[in-house]
Figure (tube, rainbow, N blue to C red):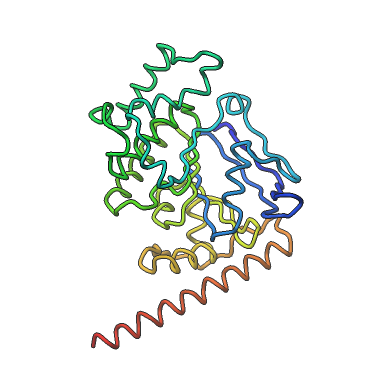
Length: 287
């Protein structure tokens, strides 16, 4: 598979203040990358850099020429105001084509046809004439995904796409995103939900302003960092394995990075111990 985005030793920040550094990963065609990390770790800053809205302080973000031309389809976190937007579903989906309109004040026949294809592709054809603000949260996310696909069908960048959805709507949206990935769309998803890991092919974990892990999902789930993170977020979700726990891949890591990994794993382990303690106390009360 061809490379679409390569980040090499990237340092990000604002007004000379470093937010995240030593970011180094590659996204290839057809990948499904899940970006994990606590609040304030630099995920939002990385999103801005990937979208071209923020210049790197050092290092390089290199995009395939075709990706640089078409850009990324972006699904941001919704605000209350956005959820109440008074427009039809069809109007919102078509708005994904605005970047391709140039100085033309109307959509072309081809752009309208693209919007209709994506409306059908996302299973919202029966909602096309409805007002966006009348839809459920899950339906609104489908509309926004269709809109993002009108911007580009190469790469989708999704920022916490299941936030605020009920469990069934979350599951349905994850399955829909996975089906888009299987059809050839590259997915980059920022998430705090450990369920997202199940669908990913690769994991990027950022913590303490540094990259702690990048690699396949399988290697992440076998790593000490990955297992600690998954257990701390959802104690019942860690898969069984016959292999010994492994530390995250350390090839090329600096001493500072290794120290950050160790510190992050230690903090997560402390959280797990507290969780187990609460379960034990709860069990004693239920006896």
